[in-house]
Image 1 (cartoon, rainbow, N blue to C red):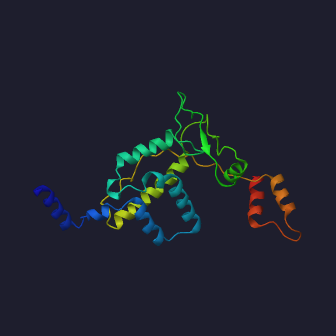
Image 2 (image 1 turned 90 degrees about the vertical axis):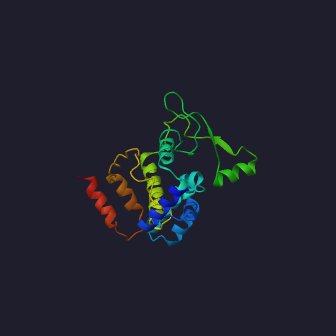
Image 3 (image 1 turned 90 degrees about the horizontal axis):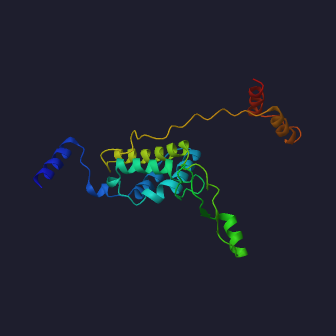
Length: 212
């Protein structure tokens, strides 16, 4: 008890003391506060919201900030990279070749309504069955960038002393190859424009790039 009190006094003197009740705030609760004050363009916000809803919230929303550890994050990254289906995001298991076992996924949206009205099954074989296990490297990097950003903000706001997601080993993402329109594709787009409109600057650049 005396040692604990000494550490608390030292942390207060150093300006690094963390209120235990702040560290008990869950990641989900903290993100709600972060989301209300975040200033970013709409595209960036939509992307981080998608990562949150699809990948982060189901796993981490209920975790207190102070109990999110580096080993747990490393294990999660490995799971995403080696076990999850990139189509339905489930974990159906892998065979000895590292391929996802056959599995089903629940229908959603219009497909779900159509099946319900017809009295048909609301599940189907997932298109990820039999493909290589693991989410794409770019997806994992985007997910972890958002997690790390949230934890860095929590450090800055005094909820936790350090960010456990800093410098985690992530799957390397290969640079995406440049995309160029072919002349035939550009001509087809131009032909479908309304009469009197000229090709935009983007199409003009694409046409020049396609001839390099």
